[in-house]
Amino acid sequence: MLKYLLLTLNLQLFANHVNVTTDDGTAAPYNDLSPEMKTFYDMTLIDEAQANLVHDQFGQKRPIPKGGGKTIEFRKFAPLNKALTPLTEGVTPDGNNLTVTAMTATVAQYGDYITQSDVLELTALDNTILEATKLLGRQAGLTLDTVTRNVLQSGTNVSFAPKKDASNNEVPVTMRSDLDSTSVLTVDLINQIVAKLRAVNAPTINGDYVAIIHPYVAYDIMRDPEWIDSHKYEVPDNLYEGEIGKIGGVRFVQSTEAKIYAAEGSEYDLASDSHTLLINNASGYTGAITSVAFDGGTVAAGALVGKYISINGVCALVTANTATTITFASTDFGQIADNTVINPAECLGGAVFGSLFLADGAYGITEITGGGLQTIVKQKGSAGTADPLDQRSSVGWKAIKTAKILIGDYLVRVESCSPRFSKSAQAN
Image (cartoon, rainbow, N blue to C red; front, side, top):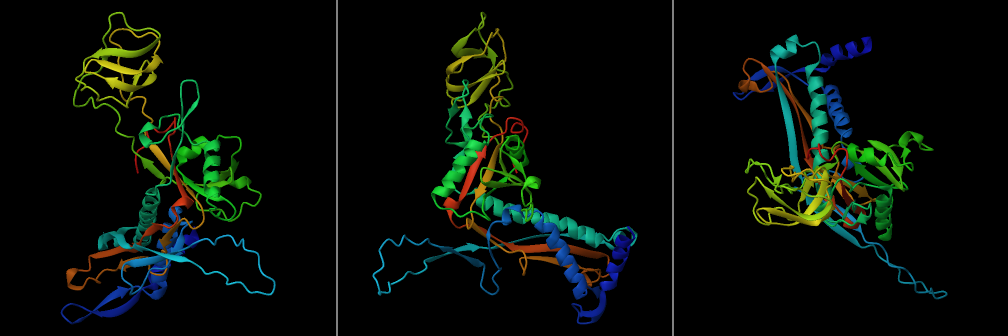
């Protein structure tokens, strides 16, 4: 505790008194940051940011271009064809050449800052600039990580978790809107993705492929008996940021910033109707049925097609509807009484999780060091005539950033749901 207090108090000793020229040409004294203090704040910001750069860990890194405009270049090397022609004794063959494809991306600048008053600096017990720098560092990390994540999520190499029918048989899924609560990430699906990557000779990252998943997805997969927690590795060193374990030749990295897609808008909007759909059958229904009559709403013909309904907690996919009848595949809802509520939203899979399975060389990013991420500290009086009473100081960050998918086959997005969490998870 004593060591921390001494550090907090001594930070101010790094400040230098220098003269600067104000707008009217006169010299005005103010406290500027010494090189040591500037480096301290820079490293504090970068350390806080790096902890959140989960999606940046596995990309091909390129320095920020200086004087080269807003375009940054990544390089993709084409594999060599098999050398199947036998060598002739004593004859040197022609040899081969590297084929390099340049791929460019345009960088953009991001940033934010916090302004604080002289009164706050005088009355606060903590070093407020240091605390603000830590907060901004975390914000910078999350911001830059999201920039990379969104680029990776835009890839077109997608697999959907299959769902299960009433007999627990696997049903293939080809689009996000068809996912339901049974569409979960399983070891079998992971093995399929690994096979998909190996089939294109995608190189591993330190011996394994890597997947970035949300904690809600991790909850499902970690319950499998084949799962190995990271602390149980034979050599638990050199763990990735956020690494939690591995299974099926894939090391899993967990992040709350792993993509969550909002539930597809497949529920009937009763808000504009303000009525509840009710079974319209004085005798009710019993056993397996293929349609029900309803009243109480103003549903347009065909409005529920491809969407789900729930009756007595049992789900059915709607294949047709009129203004008074809903048709679906043969379904047994049990005993249905007249005026039983028909819930048109309950059976949706809910939020969808986009898990990223990565091979080496799949994408490129810009580095955050060397000008990619900077701290800007303005002390009281540095604004000259814009702050005539030395009342304001500020600390902020700015960064130049971009990301680029380099080899689409080396990156697979797996979309799945979670039976426990998809109903409540929010898009991010």
